[in-house]
Length: 294
Ligand code: CO
Image (cartoon, rainbow, N blue to C red; front, side, top):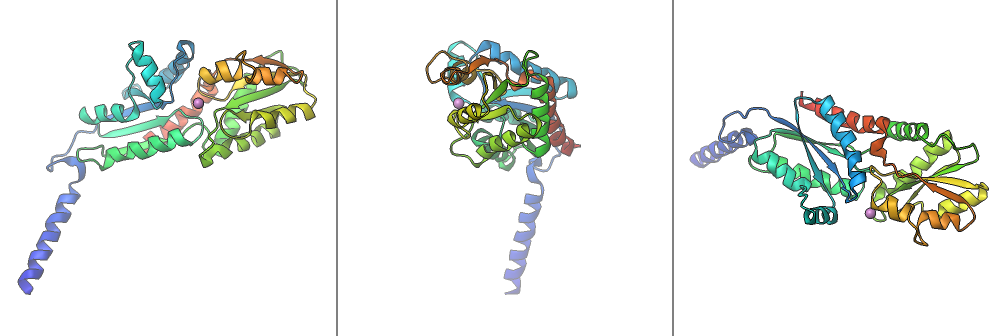
């Protein structure tokens, strides 16, 4: 009996010792190698892709000695661009490459607007790379754009600052967010409406796939007796949704729907990644995550 207890105890000690070595693989200490992975939904519109250059530049200036890579969460976009000869990584492929190249600490920045479906999947999948044998020692996923009340206020201020100079006090601004019909983070757009309303009551936030819907916004425009509205994307890039669903000529585009009730609609094709003050917010989120590596 005593013998058995000793065997069990020593087995336990061995096990603990082995687990304690963690990811350092067979005991040797790995050299610390840090990387940043920037993750966006992606866009197939070349002009819109340029918006990502602002973020790339800002991140490389902030972290001059850190490896910076990109990945895109949309499979449809990756497929489209692959046909044009542009091979883009998914987050899983980009993380696999970093793992294979011996990176030990990775900060992932979500360039999504809300912590919705895309962010959620990214968060879950990225953390698997810590659990893997030979995986990262540390991985942190920085938060998307609208992650705190402070973020909402900063984004609202930045956007208001860049609204067209020729906008009069009676002109409205309608922002188009993506929205998420199946994710609780869709509420973020309601909160964003409230934050804007406190600063500028003629700014309204609607969504393509979630709430508020364009119909809800339309009734608000009518109540406020608005005659003219600027349409602005609340998405990192002015891609397909902005060009077609917001500004397009189809009868169900926001421009058409708004003009249909006698309100002049002027689309502005500029993504949030083109506002320097908005880029700063994303970079701040990344800095906060990265600071945990020091
Ligand atoms: Co979409």
